[in-house]
Image 1 (cartoon, rainbow, N blue to C red):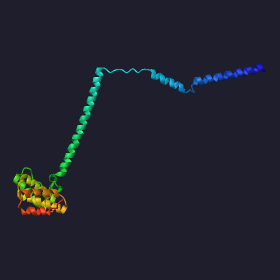
Image 2 (image 1 turned 120 degrees about the vertical axis):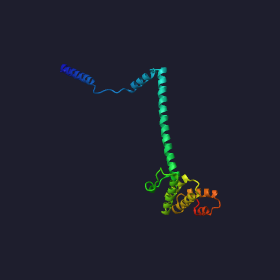
Image 3 (image 1 turned 180 degrees about the vertical axis):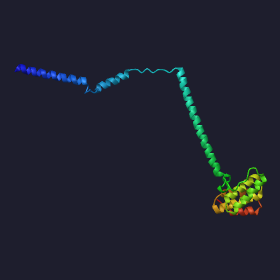
Image 4 (image 1 turned 180 degrees about the horizontal axis):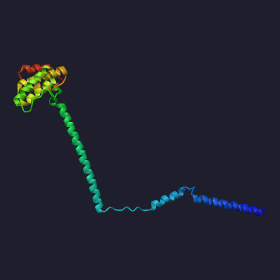
Length: 208
């Protein structure tokens, strides 16, 4: 009995050892590193010195050249964007502060004069067409044509008076072009201080 029991125990031990060896070979269970092992690895890494390689003069020069090129490209890009923005802003301002330079839709096709015509014919056309639009209560169109006539004969008092009268009607009826009306009337009164027509227009034009 005793001999048989010892043999059974030895057999169990052998089987246990075989199982343990099989588990180690299969790698199914891997032990995590302990805190002390991780700490030792960390200290080992810190103890190593890092070998930083110095760049050569040629490499430094190449790096500086690349940086300069990149900065130059960024500067050019910023300058182009700024210039385009400035041109666009300037164009919008010109459009807003110079209403006479905007051709009214009604004039775009039906009320034009060929460029080949003489200045006198152009002047007479602009004045006549301004009178037409004034009779239609189209103050902006009339003012536009009178202004074109004054570009040809800037000192023509008759057209200046027509323009001042048109701007006054535009201000009193449509509440637009009031600043232009006051500016022109005051300018003409300084030139013709005793003119009653101009004083009457200034009286009709609303103040700010």
